[in-house]
Length: 62
Image 1: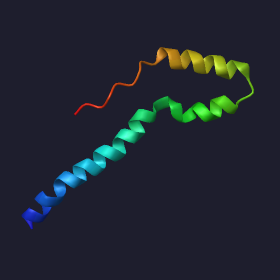
Image 2: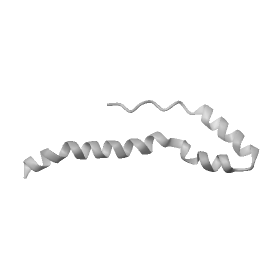
Image 3: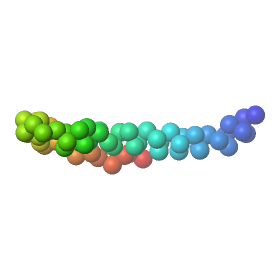
Image 4: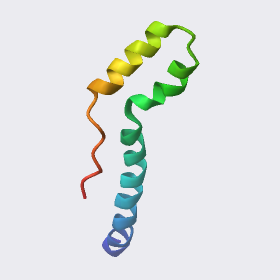
């Protein structure tokens, strides 16, 4: 049974890495569509301040 685990272990790690990376890379930009559709100028100004204060996303470490 140990050979079966060793066979599927790399695939499980790859699966988890692919699915966890997508969520991390989206960050605050999940809200972008909501902010873009908002009619209030204050919201757009606050969004621009927030985006400018966040550091750019770094590529995932391998």
